[in-house]
Amino acid sequence: MYGFVRQSDLAFGNSSEAKSFLVAGIVAGSQKNIFESVLQKPTIFKDRNAISPHFTPSTFPFREKQISEVSQILGLALQGQKPDNLFVYGKVGTGKTCIIKFVLQQCESFSLQSNGSAETVYVNCRTHNSKYKVLLSVLRKFFLEQNFMGFGSSFVLEKLLEYCQKNNKHIIIALDEIDQVKDLDELVYSLTRANDELRNCSVSIVGISNNVLFKERLDSRTKSALCEREMIFPPYNAKELRQILLERLPIAFKESVVEEAAVNLASAIAARESGDARTAVMLLLRAGELAEKNNSVKITDLDIIRAKRQVEEEIIFNMISTLPIDEQLVLFAISSLSKDKKGARRITGLDENVLFSGDVYDEYVRIASSLKENVVSARWYREYISQLETNGLIITTQSGKGIRGSTRLIKLAYDSEKIFEAMKKELFK
Image (cartoon, rainbow, N blue to C red; front, side):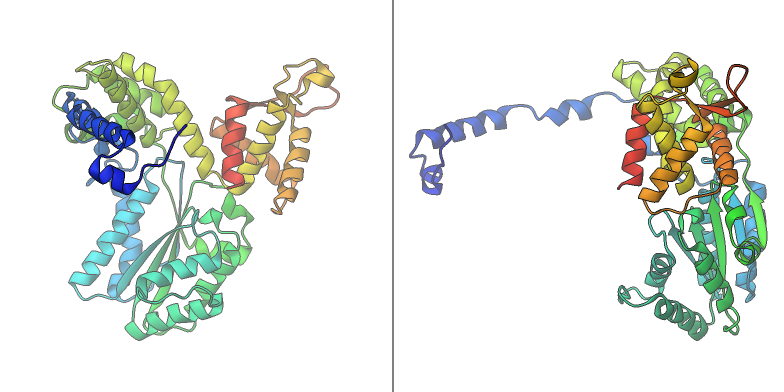
């Protein structure tokens, strides 16, 4: 039984409960704080943040060409001219967002120093996934003390153009994960047509996407407007990833902690699997944590091997969260059928985790319809299956003898339960 202790009893120690409370407090106060041992423990890290995927370096090895090209395009704003709209795409971890953010920051900094006409805005379209949300996000930068929530999108757009015209500004809007904007055609059309009304100022768009296919589904006018200039960020190779890691080591780790073999292996694994710099960085981070846990003062190639499985799961779930909505729906359909053991085995005797492409498409249609998402054609569905395979999330093969007709067989590359739960959280959040 637990009773209530009166405040007066606690104050004057007039109850057994109060005495127990005071004794417990004295004992607790005399004990060593649990975090003292944590902070006193030796560490091999100098700055753990410098080896995290979210760290923005001061230099960008092997992206000098991309920086120069983006700067040439957007630099027109500093000369009082409208830059072309730019569409940037490439796989996750190829430096797209970092480079665009860096160039935008440099552009605005130079403009402020020289009293120039350029202003820049960065918008994450995973968070702001509609025309209205994007416009509101942009407007917040220019009207810090005003809230336009509740006003219509036409009014919000007019306020943006009014600011642009009144201040003679050339505004560059970077839309990261632009494929997440549900009414993208309307957004691009509104922003590009706005330039017809502006004098001595302009609005330009930089679109960033991991999905090279999504632009093919855009309205022809939107595609033409958005893709005035295009740029591909290629994956890094092992040599480039090694150099990227070597530049991070002196910042992230104490001297001589990381063995050369560990750097070489992390670079090779990341290059073979994705060409993703974040994979290489995470391998080294998790290997460092494992080494510390084992009280080791060195990070070896064995630590990289041990870290690989953990990093694979993190990368997979990060990749899932950045997939375009249609690919997420297809992957969810595959994981759902796989989890429920509704594979081709029931007809053919194949592995129960192997699925018929037609069954997956039917399940995708059912899920997309239930979520009120647009259902894509069979042609686009096949493209998304190819993209999922390219990303290493599924394995496909053509059916052989013993199956009537010819169809594509699909198998999930990872645990169906984990993928299903991750997709469920992503789609139904």
